Length: 458
Image 1 (cartoon, one colour):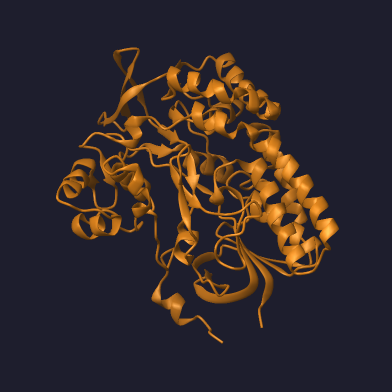
Image 2 (cartoon, helix red, strand yellow):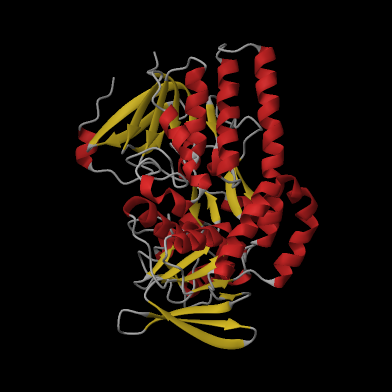
């Protein structure tokens, strides 16, 4: 006997879309999310930010309808819920308000989104340096906008956040972009297909136009990045631009180098993963319906591969539609009609992906930082120490973890795992890339013994 027809982990665009589609089809849904409200990162606090809608743009406001629709008799919502174990037999173990619980379902959908790619360079661990995603959380959760900050890195989110800061009358001091002319040239081969998603292209051009109109300086093709403490609470940021060494002083340095799938849950439950050569990250192996190698386990949205929030909504729909068909809630003709319509929309939405992946490719400097750069923040392990371990014959991440303690800190490798694997990939043959296929162990998130002791098992 199961508790629900479907358990969905993550209440972002994909999770909300899957929950609504499944509930409208007659399935009993349990929707779990770690945040206090639905919306994920893209629609974070969208219902609470009524007076700030203009700051975050129309795409942000569009999330209100999704969040409102979750008030459905077939959807059980549990927010502030931390999922710490998912089992192949469709058991989900999660904690809320200091107490652990167990829920079961016929189907499980992972929709836990993406995480920012670690962006290591000398000084990136200093106070006053934070990721752009973290800054956006503060902006949406507390209405706190950074002033006179310097934005460094690459990717659409860099322009989006800069535009949001401008709309809130807190424009950034400067944009320092690691994107190179070579990346721009390489991306042109994918431009014809990208034109099928003209809406996204126009939006990107509008971001850049607003940044230019606001008079925010842009430095392109920057390299040799380094942050230093100036001793008065400010950061001196050094970089090379057009062959000249330059510096900027700021109270807050916001860094970003794209996002990668959040795969901790899928890795822990035993889903097969593969290396995405264009996005330089491991991602789950799924079919076009989001099905994994584990029966009854589906993946929707950016945790299955980075495609953006608009595509995530469609992936949530197509996963739920497949489950509705498999449970007999809709017939074959309706299933085919709905899935074709969603797949058609996905084709146009995803047509821009290769263009973006090439245009905002990860620079080699990020993939192979200088030896003195700290990689593991918790244990303060450097690139040089990792390379030394590899030179001594270490061939696996677990072996490296045991030997030099990288990834042994409080975050258990959540921050450094992607960097460590990138360094290792530069030291092994591409034919051996599967030896680095990631694994994860439960508990996925830290829990206390007190929480475990309160868990009721049938």
